[in-house]
Image (cartoon, rainbow, N blue to C red; front, side, top):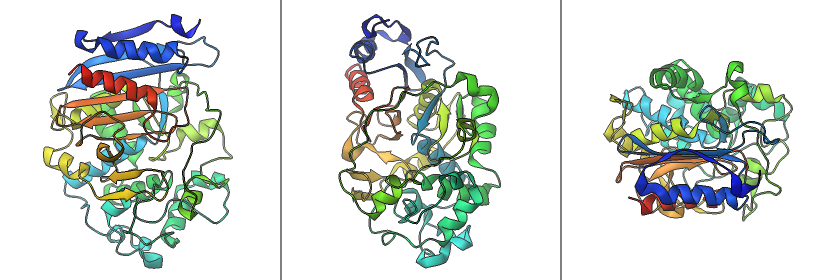
Length: 378
């Protein structure tokens, strides 16, 4: 089947016809293997398109049941889980991390607040000292290393994206406050009650639904090289390795290894764009949505080659604008192209997932094209 012959399944409201055209164009230009894009407006699914294949051999359709690895887009879900703790009065963004994690105060980190940690200001973007990549699968060992680590830059002075360590930092605080892992809380509090196909830690029973990935042929352009970038991305141990693919899928690493459908991600982000309401229930108060998504730091990121505006774990659209024109829009993007976003001004939430990865760190042209077409239909 040639790219131009790909059949698109799903639906789009008539005024979003250009979104379907843009989706088809991505396939016609050979940019996709399989993909899905879902848009929710004021709580209603107005676009849900899918096409292509879930496997590299072209024998399995990318359909409503297909789960896709979303990499760093997982951070938006982790940030929502943290915000729910704040909403419940169990945690405060401005309190020091060391209040709930005393060991974290080592090496001058005692004053780092939860919101600084979530906005990538802690100076812990990765480990410079050599380690076995398989150590990432040992949660407690990584948390001990992070607690004992000296920050790579003075905390609070700059942001520097924490691609993997974010999940352990946020996840350990969450576990100490909540008594559960993020993966467990996601399953029990959101996924099961609202029938959401979103996982942090994938059960083996779901493995058959996961799309195969087609890796990119090159590496991203990080723009600048420094210790923060090297620790984050450019060492042999910067990411988990040395274990099976099954071990990776089952692990709970709330920064990088979520699996989800675009439909479920868009429903969550649509709720955050619509006062926190999901299926008639409140998953986050309007006040906390505003607090979680407000800017904590803006400026040249020490790891990513962009000027970033960071909220409490969410990327803000105002600086790089990967998700349409809304300056109040927030969300996250993931390695290879996935993204999810919420625009509370227009009550619009959306998500894009795919299994053919690009090298774009942020603002992949495929979802950008879809989102621009969506805004044109508003």
